[in-house]
Amino acid sequence: MKNFLLLTILAITMLTNCLYAQDKVIPLYKGAAPGSESWTQKEAENNNNSWNTRVVYNVTEPTLTYFAPDKSKANGTAVVICPGGGFKALSIDSEGYDVARWLNRKGISCFVLKYRLVETLSDDPVKELFSDSQDQKERERKTKEVIKLALQDGLNSVSYVRNNASEYDIDVNKIGIMGFSAGGTVTASVAYNYNNTSKPNFIAPIYLQYEWTIKNEVPNNAPPMFILAASNDQLGLAPHSIDLYQDWVKAGNQAELHMYAEGGHGFGMRTQHLPSDNWIELFYDWLNNIKL
Image: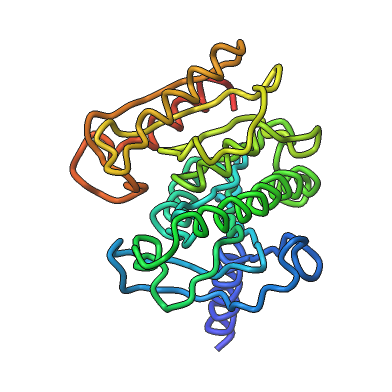
């Protein structure tokens, strides 16, 4: 009986630790997020859409979901991960949680960011994103307004991780941000607009939409950047990664660019039986190369 009780306690402890490691949700703001205080839409999920993956939409309260590496493997590096979805949804698994779990196995602490999005009026944000029923100018206006808020969410995410680094056994000099598609836009915008606290130590926009990036001149002594996309990106975004790379290098900053021949857009951690399936290995090798 005593042994059974000890095993039960051990099992509960292990389960609690697992839940903490992967399900600790951290609000970015106390109370309503500045700039969206009047929003009334409710966050929801959709599992039945043309992307064939789970998406989150109508985010009004930005959060970070913490994924902790095994303590025996933890190396002090941390990354904020920004899923994509056209600022209408978040591809939360293949561009968020799945990325975090892979990096955890390499000892990296991960914080998946749910940043603010354009309101979805139906239960299918993906369908709305590609609908022709909306006025294009009005859609662009709403998107640009939300990007400003998403930028603040990205900056505050990096600041949060740095300000609380000791709690998570993180090195304050090894904190980065990466993002996919629209999340890559958020990532690049952070790279142009940081202050001392919100400055990432490395940046990784993956098949980003660069035209939407909030930017002015490339900062001096900007963090090193890892950029990756596929030439056959069906949204035509491959040149965006090249433009960002050129801007970074022209300013004298360090950058590495990878362009797959195939892979399309939005591949994230999906398996397509293409060389692009292994993109995250390149990212990890790059981190090792720059000692982060």
